[in-house]
Length: 338
View (tube, rainbow, N blue to C red):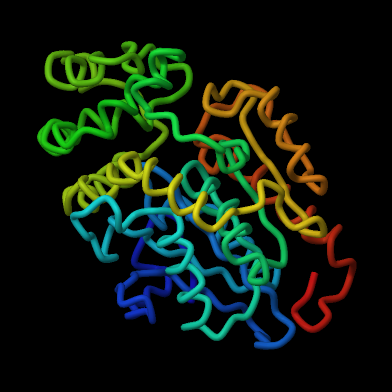
């Protein structure tokens, strides 16, 4: 099946009810000469606000290089279940879903690759289910260990005002405003790094910008008109689920504290961190700090790139992952292990 990044329908779409009781939509691309024992699977986890479609430029090249590539719409997105209650979106629950998805496709261990919230989820998957990963790649969000004490987002934002938008996302009010101004919201978040967008990260700014700033209607984005409309049509299925990820901090903290999660990832787990040098969500000092918890992390900064590296530097990201995987496994794949 040919995979055309411009045509979402050209990918192999599946839907499955998982053992966790949730129904997930996912794309499952199997390479030629696939062998269930020896062919590694790449499980790609998108962030906010995104879809399986965020990986459209990487899926085809990775499949052509001999990998099975599985890309779900995460909980709350697209045609995957969208529970209303925020507690359903705790990372422990998301990781249970990912493990159940691997079970469904009969894959014991995968290379898990995540962007944005997907990077956070990928790293937590390595803590909750360490035996299910061959390797991990995290894009655009550095690893942060489980915290010993809970700090509400309101307090975080009082110390770092640019986190004010997360306070807004954590409120139920944000769902109605964003649903009502979805076209502007998508333009704002997928804007080109060079676009002169209004400030929206401090508390109170985003609601005012979405409702009153008509300049957003003309903001240049990283998406083609067709891609923009596809995202819009999927996000019109409701933004409560995607925003629920920002309403889980207390649930996440309590679950991690109860499980006494180790702050360090498995010592022999290879980890790749790719990030844009101009991305305010992934500052280099925080990337370096993560090495304390991930001794086997390789860093790949992309000069001049912002947050949406799979779009801004599609080929670089694709090839950096392939080069890293080749380094890990050498010239031959043996028993599906890297």
